[in-house]
Length: 288
Image 1: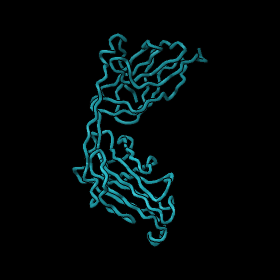
Image 2: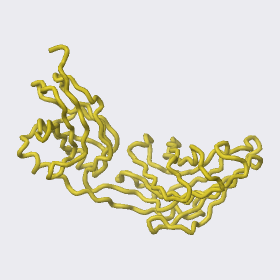
Image 3: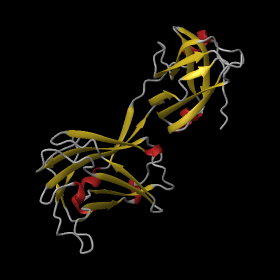
Image 4: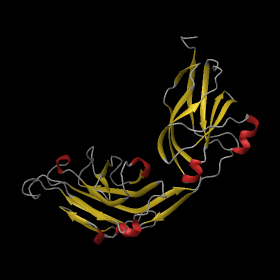
């Protein structure tokens, strides 16, 4: 995909691209922690005594039993599902879906796959996420980048399950989940950045970078600044339109070859020139 770009003199770009302080707005979905909203199977859902970010929490308690599952699958998949209401589905203007997770168990150590989180769209397509960050007797924040889901329609259904085969017969495990919320940045904010090709020939015409970015769609579409630096000197600055989520950008380079050496790519620098960065090495081209 081609991107429009603008080359701006280094002395001017620090003012033009002074990065806005990014704050986060939240929309809490407290009803998702109501046990009556969940449809459990081979487990029990109750009100948890805990609070997450001072918001309600539900407890999914699972007695692992290798003989009590469905007749065809006695070692089964204890699970619970929830259907979102129409009012709860407006996620398009948000960057992430988040909640907190606290785990208790009769075990001294959780299996590699302690629990799986499900998201379904209105067409029934699903995204399954193994919550490997679950830790006994500790809170963990689960943050799902909505642009990475790859679903065709809006999220309409949520779920949790375990595979009993990952546990031992007569184990028990309880997952406390709550503080369900949507979050969005008020200004562009890069959460991941890497150089797709960390070593470039000096006569390369583009510099590919991969990034994950959050923020208002209109601001992202109008362009974010990307700088290439050699030491403290800014070699070039480009403004490239982006969208929320993970993507690869092809930063146009000048026709004049870059001198070999170590460079740094900086995205959305602030007024002091600080921002997410990635290292790039430029080397002599074999065709020169």
